[in-house]
Image 1: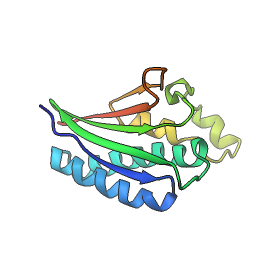
Image 2: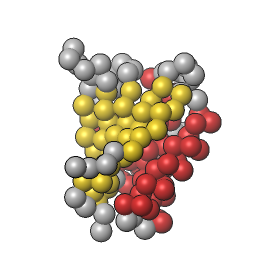
Image 3: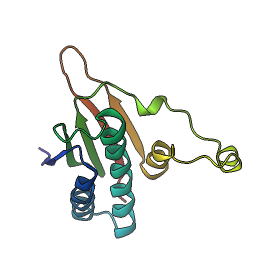
Image 4: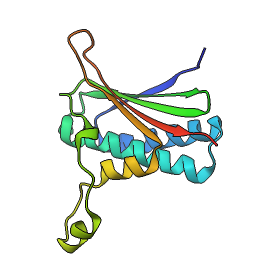
Length: 141
């Protein structure tokens, strides 16, 4: 049986510090090196920032849950929320040449998550379960 650890955070950007620390400590505990742990924390930070800003519009009365577990040789981070479903995997990859040529700002968080994590899964809320779950998966080498 896998041990699942979790924290709840209100939808306030100041909570990101607590979330990053939690993720980095769990990643190191699971056997990731410091560089990989920092990258996983960054990916989780991006996902949570998107929820806080776009899904919950900085409503501090709303919460998100971040759960971690080690399954075989993988760190699985589940980000659980009750916002309107939005599948980040449906966002197309950015053309970086075009991005810089047009001096765009923002919009790279999902691309960053894809580049840092080994796998990403998304399960939208349904009539049986009112929670969205975004799973960020990192192989432990």
